[in-house]
Length: 336
Image (cartoon, rainbow, N blue to C red; front, side):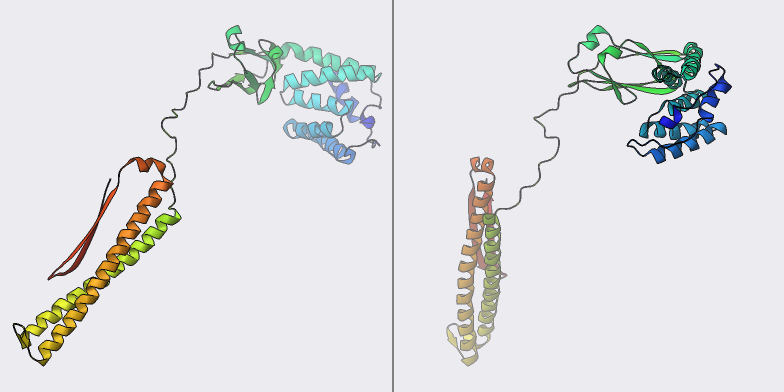
């Protein structure tokens, strides 16, 4: 921001005077694009928090202000904040950037102060090296990430400054099992190394065994028609059984008024009723049996058409029915 790059400072190297370079800069808006009002508010809040000693809360506000409206003054404040928060690698990189920007802006005071802080921090930095052997580097499609950010091959086997804390390194490649490890890096003076091992081959899925059960196939129209037709046939057989039982009952009743084939009025009437009901039982039995057999045939044909593999199996169906004193009976059987 122009407001944080145009003010003058004392040019001293001491940390207190370095802080004054930011503290004494007046606030004024910059006309160019960006939400400068938000950036200014965040900058002021960050300075107040930093002044109060709450670097953990101040740094995110200063970082967001710098993202919205980059300026050398904000970057300088952010560098001091990160140093106070123990993120020495971030502070060192930011002081180095401030040094270059101040030189371009003809600000020797800031340039000299930033250079002094960067030089003082450099011996204290912790580092992390992600070590990749030539054999691993030759893996096709190898990707290395550190804290979720992809590292290009130029950053492999290079000692780089990092902030203290946990850093996650991940290695992946097509057809390989992903490797992941965490490096615990001390705040100052640590030299951590993570060596990526050879990535194991990913297991090959057995295609002969489906990983999920095949969903049950829904019935076809012909199968449903077969079930419906067969159901009507079963009802017909049931009605025929009822009439057969009633006919046998009437015949038994006629015996009370008959002597052989010679019957009285009541016996004759009972026998006529028995014959009539027997005929009805026969009609219902034949019709019901035919419908049941037709329904079964439709169902089997529909099943074979819907599942061609089933057509290789031979199918035979048989419907039998009969009568006895206990009533009418029917049986349908299928052989595969």
